[in-house]
Amino acid sequence: MKTIFSKKTKKARQLALVLVSILALVLPFAMPRATNAATMTVLRLYLNRQQADITTGVQFELFFTPATNVSGGSGVNKVIFYFPTAAEHNTKWCRTVGTGDLVITGITDPTGGSESATVLPGTTKTGACTQTPDTFTISGVDDLTAGTKYGVRVAMASSTVIGTTSSAANNIQVSVKTNNGTSDIDTGTLATSIIASDQVAVTAAVTPTLSVLLSGNTAALGILAAATVNQAGITSQIGTNASGGYISMVKYDDTLTSGTDTIADTAGGTIAAGTAEYGASSSQAGNTIAQWSPTACSNTATTSNATALTTVFQAFAASATPTASETTTLCFLASITAASAAGSYHSNATVVTTARF
Figure 1: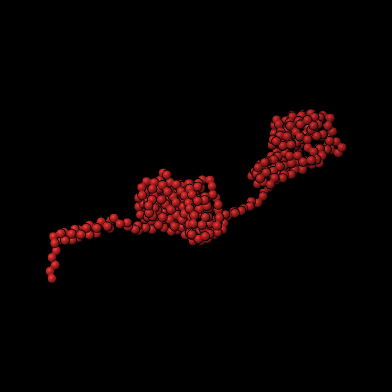
Figure 2: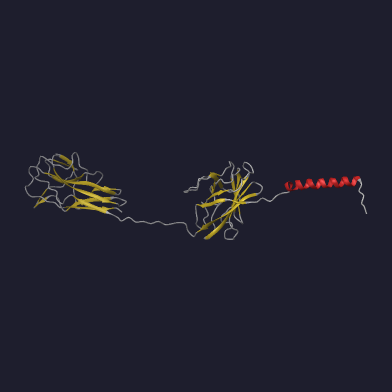
């Protein structure tokens, strides 16, 4: 049986075929297509503290290389990283939900290290974190170029927004992704670790030292005369690493004595030729034993500063700080009158040095 079609029916069929052909061409482009996320490379997350349950002062420094261009536009893109959903990690990395006091800074290198990265672009970058899972979102990022390594620091301005997980754990997974403002582009995963304590107590000791060297054990004043002030000295060389330095002191058993005859202790702070007096002076100023003046320890002076020695120690040298080597001269002085008794005069002086540790 032969079917007969009208002209109208033929035109309708032809129109339908045309519409089907057009839809076949248009629909693949008009329908939403799933984004095939690529895996980013060079993933590093630097922590400035690796100790468990740190509540303040924590910062993250993230470095990554996108595999795909991120082209949402200037200030539209995002970089996101988040931690495991395990209960012990939640609310510990992100301690305060929201923007808080997060400071986002593009960097080329981590603190103390080197990555030679490109600063994460964007003049209005902001950061926020949410919990369960603890997620950090960096917004306001400009377009990113595939194959370029970027660096960014996430830190706190003042409060305890960022922390570390409450217990030590290895192989903590951290997921990182880029986003063009509408959909995720690249993803990647890295691992970090938290230990019980990241503090190392370094100790050391330095052996205390004190060295004392006297130039001799005699001070010969020679033959005394009324015309001069005879002087004779010894040097004391001190070295010590005591934090408070040292002090050197002197005392005697008695004034210059010959039998029952004596040369009296100086009384006025100065010995002048023609007076019967005995005392001591120092090359160093600032001690109980006065500094010599006007000349150094010699037999040419006719007057000189002097302090009376006693049976109680008096300082003639000192330092308030450690010294490798410091030398002081302790000078003994005497003069007589024309009526001073003849004889062989003697006095024993004791010298001691104490380090002030």
